[in-house]
Image 1 (cartoon, rainbow, N blue to C red):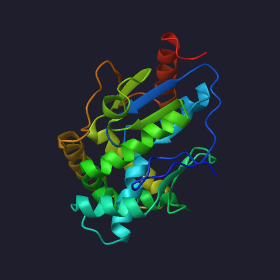
Image 2 (cartoon, helix red, strand yellow):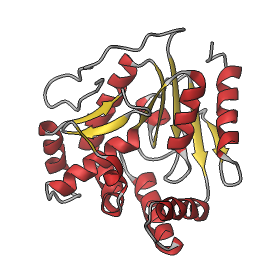
Image 3 (cartoon, one colour):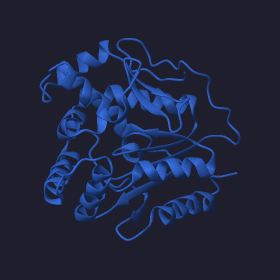
Length: 248
């Protein structure tokens, strides 16, 4: 198993072998709000270009799930940071796509549940939490220097020197409909209005937080996904990377 661990007092350590770099570093960041399709796009871009993919949102969801399991108040930054010092959030890079682990356990769909959804932006807003997970994300890039990483602050904060940066957008209404379709496919029957309210509330938290707010990174290519099929979004990103000479 190839993993990266959340540190306590020790530096981040890679427990797996580094990637075999074919043609030097290539860090691609994809940022944007919830429901724009970042995870699906990142996985397909990585597959097309032979890169490793990192879902940073899953890390913050794992931190939110840990908060719930331990009964910590989501607003208690010190308590959550302390829990991250004694519990282990890792990425398993032997799965396809790589998956997040909590104390060595695969979390599956548990991190996508409504309880995690309701607090993840609150948990992720704490600078103490972000500092720990940003350190892990940068360590991942050290061991996997040909990387597609997606989240809220990858191109603006974590990798401001990325080789290619993208910002995906979509209207809140379109994102809500997509989320409802996903949930209904899994047997959950939620209405669009309640999901829309949740998305808009999360947007306010993500854009308004003081540490690592959701912004379009300077120089990032913006892609509005409202009326674009997934394959076309992937084609545009891959073409932009290749045009910039980022793919050998």
